[in-house]
Amino acid sequence: MSNSQSNNYGGRPARAPEQTEEHYRLRKALCEIGRLCYQRGMIVGSDGNLSARASDDTILITPAGAMKGFLEPHHIAHIDMQGQVLDDGPKCSTEVGIHLVAYQERPEIRAMCHAHPPHAVALSIAEVDMQMPVIPEIIVTIGGIPTTPLATPGTNELPDSIREVIRCSDTLIMKNHGSVSVGANLMDAYKKLDMLEHTARILWLAHCVRGDLSPLPPEAVAKLLATRSELGIRTKNTLENRCGLD
Ligand SMILES: [Zn+2]
Image (tube, rainbow, N blue to C red; front, side, top):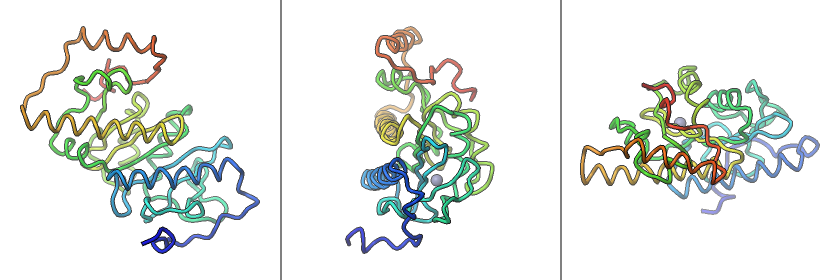
């Protein structure tokens, strides 16, 4: 089935006068990253949602109920920072609240991916702690991957549940549900989602071989974190207070 045949999400093409070059570029990028998430098994059906903040402080976001692997630029919703739909365009994602909270709490970020990566979600169901420092690359680049408490999707519980943690971490797992990753642009947010799910796969395999894993010793973690400045990495999550989740 071609993309044009599979797309029937309603919404009319965004009217040209409101469409800046930047908005169109972001709309295209949202479609591309949506396809990537779908192809990589990070989402199925109409799971997940993606957004990007433009320089005019409005947000381009995937529409409600759509399959994010098959979107075209005119399907993307355009909202303000309060979640109100602009341009008389498509309705935005029902999980818009987690995006708004992320942009409120992290004014420097420009994009967010919410997906349902299967290994990471499975580990949260099994209550495996993804903040445990075991993989050097992740310690240096991401820090830890915290899991937020169980919250009901489609209610204010969900955005409220991530508010504290998103302040100190670019990635998190919402227990039994899905991931959130934020970044300087959509590819950066996607990259962190990819790393998060790859980490979950490694931890899954390690747990299959031996149930009780040990973290790296604190001095090894400190040495790894010390390399960040040399590498020019300024990730918020330093593993110091486990994002207040203890
Ligand atoms: Zn979700």
